[in-house]
Image (cartoon, rainbow, N blue to C red; front, side, top):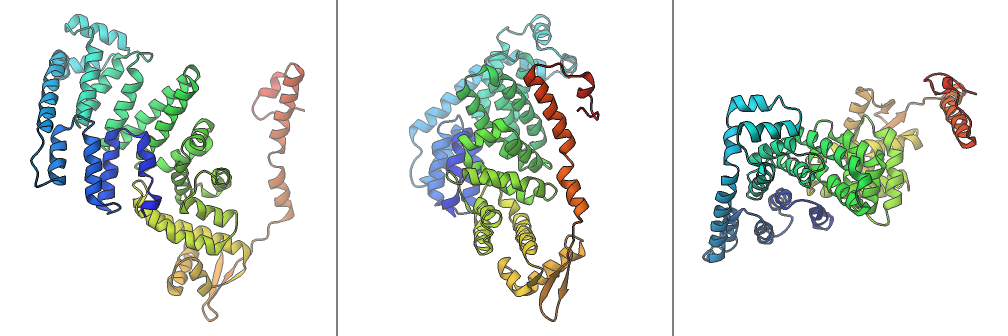
Length: 442
């Protein structure tokens, strides 16, 4: 299903090192020709400092050829640069290896005080932050992510937030934690980076803000799909935070695939957010569509059950070959079938199990067992007529009184805010009592 592969689109917004896991995934799943993938990987590696890995890849790609002289020369340059940069951070490395000193350092909460302590008590160079940053970046380019993470944590403490290296340091720590698969730590760094971007957005050019948020949206996928509460966080950020929703709609509507998947498999919040998701999918259908977004359109816009059935088959193939979603195939299919069933049951009171099995892409026996499990776990008010092969839906009549309550439950608060807005427009003084929680104002 290379036609629905998003690697080319996503990789535009990733660091080169973050693209390498994609290449491994595509190779393992035989999405593309293996030699082409090795060639692409070699092209990526050649722009980093991973000289030994480049030699290995060249040998894999051309096993009968000698390794070009330029590869060995590049390795020697990398080793020489490593030695040169290492000498500049030798003293701070000794400090970081001393447990007693590190214990003292851990008590500092202010970067300027720590900087003064290091320069006066341990004779550390005044350029130490820049030297540490450069060495950490070099180690990252070499693929030593754990070392990078340790040094950049230290650099972040020393740097003021307005320093030219501070933002890059945040990105570097996040990338290192992702590549080390420390996703809990990565989530903390992701939140810190988002706070920094949102705080400084008003002071940056609009294009820079858009660029930073675009990268943030893409990098966050690594964290959200590998964290226990990640799907909730993804929905909150992508669907209900206007700056990030606008970023997705403006630059990267392909992210709707991941938002849609997160909503479908999020059982606890699905009902409350589907309406908002459908609206966004409809708005962006001209710029991006795939079987996952089209499944929602078929079901909630066109009420096309045959189309939804066809798209569900395509969804399975798309999910299997998506780096972020391949582990969610069974969960997605189960919840997608439940959505089809729920919509179908709203329309019909008596449903043929044979017909339903066709809509759900299941055998009649499997469909009947699936419905039995839904009834057993109190997720469905229905009975099965085994003789006729029908599912008879229970009816829940909503009383007129309950309907009135539902329609008017927000009327009080809406009237309250309307009155406040009128006072503001007219320039009238708002009574103090009107701003207190729980008090009515007329």
